[in-house]
Amino acid sequence: MRLPEPERREFGENIIPLINIVFLLLIFFMLAGTLTPPDMFDVEPPETREARMEDEPEEGVILLSRDGKLAFEGEEMDLAGLSAAVAERLQDEEPPTLTLKADSGVPASLLLDLMDALRDAGAESIMLLTTPEA
Image (cartoon, rainbow, N blue to C red):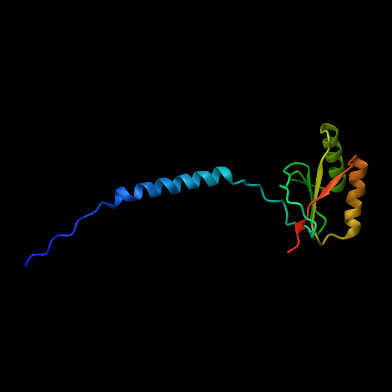
């Protein structure tokens, strides 16, 4: 007795639509996702209960690390250089917007010195970045 031969299927025809969908999803996520450059140094903002969900600004960001390092718009600098760069930026932009991303472990005296320097440079309002409380 002879058994019938099983049908042979071509798997290539069935997998092509799957490959197309995978490539379309890949392109979608590449275009839809926003990639931001990493901060120059590690900064963990303080937590707050009153958090508003807004996108983190890309310009006018001042970083203050736990050990006192400062950076403005991706460039590390000292306090005097920061004051000069902020004063120059505030002359060019209307209304001036500055965002401070300070580490939660920064001593209050260091933060007050920074705020005084920014006030002397002409900053009128500064937004402090925080993270929502868990």
